[in-house]
Length: 105
Image (cartoon, one colour):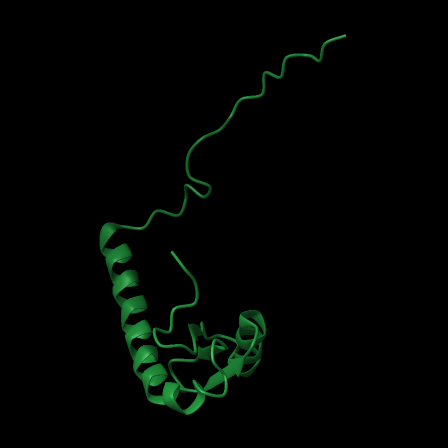
């Protein structure tokens, strides 16, 4: 006995079509994110030399407004600890190595 042919319609398109950002809003969001990243990058470069020898390849989560940071071996723990202190903040994550990159491409 063969299964019945599934005639279910596949819907394609946006998940939330009611959310439509203009090109200006997209550009503004990208610019704000880049500014936050650059600010956190300066903080990372300032503290990197203090911790790179003792915590090599650990993660550092930085909160951009208060400039507080958390260093942990696990990226999720670092992010969680920083979010507990600053619940409305979105932390920027770096890895304590020469480049600060968290992964490979």
